[in-house]
Image (cartoon, rainbow, N blue to C red; front, side, top):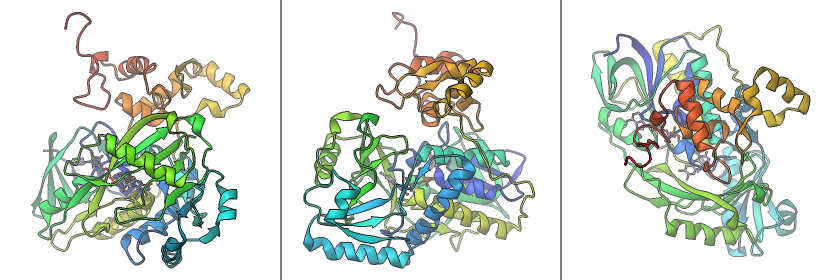
Length: 481
Ligand SMILES: Cc1cc2nc3c(=O)[nH]c(=O)nc-3n(C[C@H](O)[C@H](O)[C@H](O)COP(=O)(O)OP(=O)(O)OC[C@H]3O[C@@H](n4cnc5c(N)ncnc54)[C@H](O)[C@@H]3O)c2cc1C
């Protein structure tokens, strides 16, 4: 048992847990984030469309709509404070037949009621000027200039680093196994000992029902709803410039085609309810569906430029609503459960509100020295030649390219590991600085990345993993096995 009594323990270091940590770190008090994986952003927050939804889709009057619109309006300022990329590229919802026009009009009306700025219906001629490769079937579309895109890894790391800078602690490889009420406190039992705390935040993604149901008699059920994707090479970048949806259906927003902030094109996701809360495999069926459905929106999409496929799991709650705040019968336990899409868009607003609820409950005072700023890892490609040469004089490792596809230098990789919280695995490096994110998917750079991790963490190279325990890469010497 840890001696310290925390004010708040947050279960889960996804975008929601890290956002709560960031906003709560404005207040005096002891905060820690407990994460079962080796790093920040290892759950759903690492595998989504990266869209900051404008907020026209979520049903008016729901928490989803409220937090979506508020969260999306927070992103531009947040991206400046925390130095991550946000692009206001706008989104388009295609209507492929005149019979569907009333559905598009209802979507428009729902968006207006939700308070989304600038929404309008555009007819085919204008649509073609916005997106030349649009399908011949498209008759009109809903245009939402407020839609945006972010890199979900960058946004999550930025929140986590800023929270840590302002005093939040992070414990990785720490799986929460039980939560027990002890007098006025909660005892949070983990695979690395127990912690006492005044309040708990349940930001455990697909596992948020498990923790809610441990402490409350009003049970909830989260079903993992898998979404599969194709990621296209940067040479396909520019094929579309807006995020292009089709009219949403019963299972969600459907297959979209969108640019990413790094210049790739992302195509997906599917929507399939599964049982396993950790099954992020891709399937031939799922990928076939993406091929067929994306062709209905965009002509001649260069899917032959696919560099990888992946999937993520939405935390689908039976009532399709966010569950936020204290259950009536579990004082001091704060849910952020059922945070499926638009959870990435909503996360800053959820984080801000949960922090306020906890500060009010515990009478926490605001810190005078809270620092809202964080500087991202320097990308030498953004420097002109003179400044780059100056940098290389003081940091020669910024002159050595390790990842050729994405032009990532040794200096960036070392800095990714030195961050707090820093990269501990090959995937942790990949998500922070994109080494291994390009066309060869780490085929060339992984051995060098492993050497740098081993050097920085002062460990043996055989201890370096792809993504934490159980993903070791070096199992023995050649010929010995
Ligand atoms: C296919 C798909 C597309 C999406 N697209 C978008 C989009 O474009 N825009 C948008 O706004 N939203 C989108 N979303 C939704 C968005 O990604 C999620 O709402 C958001 O990432 C949820 O964040 P989270 O922090 O709640 O969950 P997670 O990121 O899953 O974080 C939960 C964390 O809890 C940890 N955890 C679980 N159990 C334990 C335990 N026992 N002990 C300790 N830690 C534990 C997990 O390891 C994980 O790191 C999409 C989701 C999917 C799946």
